[in-house]
Structure formats: structure tokens, C-alpha cells
Image 1 (cartoon, rainbow, N blue to C red):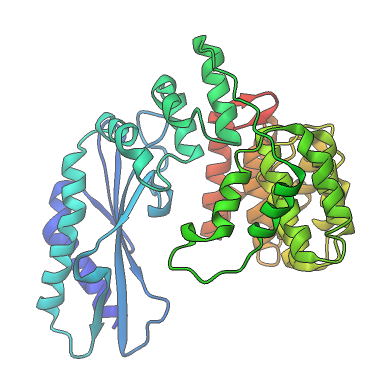
Image 2 (cartoon, rainbow, N blue to C red):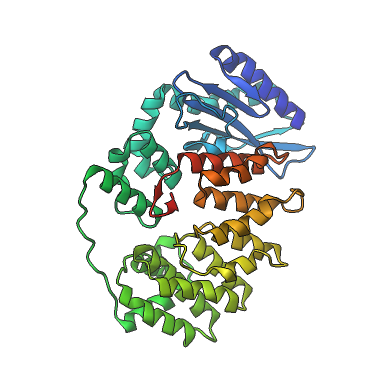
Length: 410
């Protein structure tokens, strides 16, 4: 059945897209406009396919870069700034031995009209950028950090400012840079604090297990959202006390306290609280809680003054899961110590043995690296593994086009 799918992809391409300047590469059709707008249609096979049954999906997207002409002319659908999947026929297309080829071809061509309509409505790179600026806030995942940085570098800093000024974490740093460059004076955020009793109540709700129709209806979801509003640094001593006392014998409590600390750290940095989380990586004996800790650290941007030895030790663990979690976390620390730990895997020659470690190390260095770190990544542009190759290309682009502010690569 896979052969029939390949014939279908090839036949539709010749009849519908080849004459319009599209190029075919495996299960992908691509078209690149003169002003640097990339369009892609991707046929994704189901992982559950068999000799008797072949199901597939149709993904499509739009892709741009900083340069006027696309350097990455083999961009993947998952690299696109805007990605969609066809919904006709409930989004799933199936070929069996009883399938009529002409019928499935008509179904797929009808589904592809969805992609054609989007492409026709956004004929240029400028039109696509204007669409992102206008609609991006309402489409989950579109105005992510990478896209916002790209738009900033393309000269749309003022336009994205209103959309990101109230965001947390790295978005805040980008907003501050735009403010600095354009003389924008932000009204200081009011201090939002919390009583000790309500703090404990909130932590308990964060770890509450519920059966609800939607996660947004749960007490846990609401508690997390409330925690995200706290920006009073005086809350840290109490959080550390709870973690060391009430959470000592309760791993669920510890896990939620760690989460609470990390959430508040994104709003107001505190070196003592950050160092506490780092040190707990070494002290935490529960594997799942330690994994949670490393994940929380990976979301922060931390100065060079923090001793990250516990995370570095984890990056050399005998457990591959721990190693990878630690390598992700190292991407939050813009220090030579962190880069040295990442470099250990980036100089390895056995990419089959260290595939995932290399992937995470590449991604992390892309977030904290500077121009002198690019050579470490360049060797992986020739990797036989397509995931590593794409990750290296993205990481280098992020370093070369990245925004640096207060020592952090945004």
C-alpha cells in the first residue's frame, strides 16, 4: 500500500503542482517565491501502517528566514512559522487493497484545496508577516519566541511589542530590548504578593488530581495561573522553608514547590532561590521529581554567577534520560562551565550511540552560544541523521541571528 501512496503523491504533483514551479522531494512538495516565502505540502504516513492498510495525513505550512532568499531550500514542515493539517475527510486518508485509486485521488485533491486557499491568500513574504502580526496572537504556537525574534530582526520590533510586552520569561527580555531601543517607558508592574496560608493552599491545589471535562476547569490549572502572577521576592524564603520542611517526606509537595519557585523566578529573579533549585538536583533522590527539577531549570535564563556543578554531574549520568534532561537544563546557563559540558557530547564521533545527547546539546548551545561556539556545531551540518542536521542548522542560525541582552541569547 505504501507504493500506492507514493504513486498518488507523484501523480498529483505532476498534474497539479509541477507546472506552477513546485519541487518534489520525497513526500514533500515545495515552492519558494522570489521574495523568500516558502510553501510546503507534506504527506505524513501513519506509524501504524501495514502491508494491508496505509493511512496518511496532509500537513502544509509557510516558512520565512531573515535573508531575502531562502538559504534552507529543503526546509521541513515542522520548521514553518505557520503549520496546518487538512481537515477534509476528518483529516485522515486511507489506502487499502479495495481502495479505488481515482476516488482516493479526488479526495486528496479536494483536501489540498485547503492548502491552496491559504497559499493564494498570502502571496508574498510581506503578506505572510502581516498575517502573523494580525492573527498570530489568536493561533496557538504561532507567535513563539523564535518567530518573535525573527520578526524583530526583520524590523518589526514595534509591531510585536504590543503582543509580547505582558509575556513572561525570554519574551520579557525581548520586550525590554525593544523598549530600550525605542524609548518606551513601561509602567512598573504592581507587586503581587501572597499570604503564607494561601501560599500553602495554592501549592496543594497545584498538585491536586481531578477528573474534569477540560483542564482549564481544574483547580490545578487555576492555581498555576494564579502562581504566575506572583512577583514579590519576599515569597522565596517561605517557599524554601516549605520545600525543606513540609515537602521533605512528600514528593508531590516538593515537586509543586519547585514549580512554584521556578514560576516566580521567571517574574523576579532571586539568586538564592535559583541556587536552591540547582542544588536540589543533586540532593533529590526521587527520579521523577529530579526530572521535573531539570525541566524547570531549562525554562529559566540564569547568570554565570550560579554554580551549576550538580547539573553538569547529571549530564554525565549512567542514565540516558537523566543525561538528556540535564543537557536541556544546561541551555539555561550562559556560562563556560555549561558550554564545556555541552561540548563533551558535541565532539563525540559516535552519533548513533549519542544521538539524543547530541540533539539536546546542539539545541542548548544554540540558545546560549556566541559566534565562537559555531564551529562546534558546524560538524553536525554533515550528520547522517536528519534530526541532528536540522537541529544544528537551526542552532547556528539562532546564534548568528539571535538577540543578545544582558548576556543571554534570546
